[in-house]
Image (cartoon, rainbow, N blue to C red; front, top):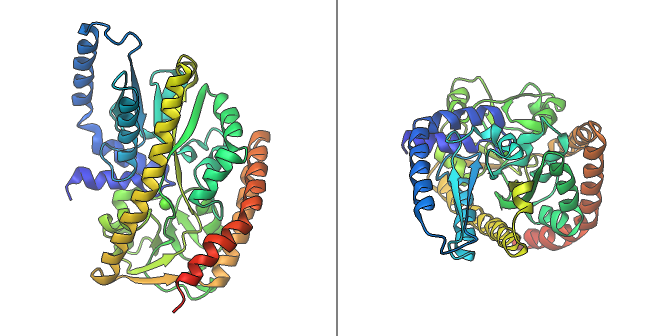
Length: 386
Ligand code: CA
């Protein structure tokens, strides 16, 4: 794996992760920024030189929170652009900018809100510094699975609240990828009960980090590229990242061979395409349908890609990587579930819209919970019987 690929994976970090990972990604792609701008200039010349055969042809700029070609999520952004191009038969062209090429990862939202970019592909919980409610549209501890968040956003009132939230910033957003279930993380020592959690130093960002603190551990955010060393030299005892597909690439199993699940902190991380509202309003109804369809197609593709590639990587890790799979004990899960509810309540208390989003989320999860348990949950337990 070369440096750019490594840094790219680093940026994926933690799903939740944010500033540190973004900084790494920025470093990883910095040297390419000049090339990207040069290419943009060339392309614009071509566009201007082309006769208006397609009178309603348009070109858009998509900034992303991912380095170019990042497995899974970087590919997802490129895929949305390709699908929009294909559905419009080349009339709608999206130029995708990796993290750092036009703006840095965490600046994507502001760039789109201000109109200096037309759209972004990224994770909504990167914007919780603006409004806590954004977290619910990606993933929250002990929250919805990938299919449940699709249920809430598409059928249970989530999309309308999301548009109200993003609308405050002149943005409209749709789900446009999902990593599916993430793993609980890599641990250097066994977790046999909640007592083993006390004093644990874990790399885990966001609301989940607050949950770990409430369980008696300490949570730190370490940039992806530095996690392996931190695990090796004992700065941290454990780390979460994404799942087998992305974790394997960073080699955490060589520093902490106990791989714990389930990933209660990110049960299905949904990613988004956000578009400047004036740009959206300027589209024809047909073109809006193209964007909606491309986002939905990518959500579908990515969930399959993560599911398949996580499975294949897990097989390799267990059969030849020396990895031991472990489940968190029940007392740890029950304590984490209780702490998660408290952390979400605190986030909801931040402002009235975050409160309404949390209420809607809880109601929708309440509607779906039983079905998920007697459906997927019971079936998977039955399929795993010896
Ligand atoms: Ca994660």
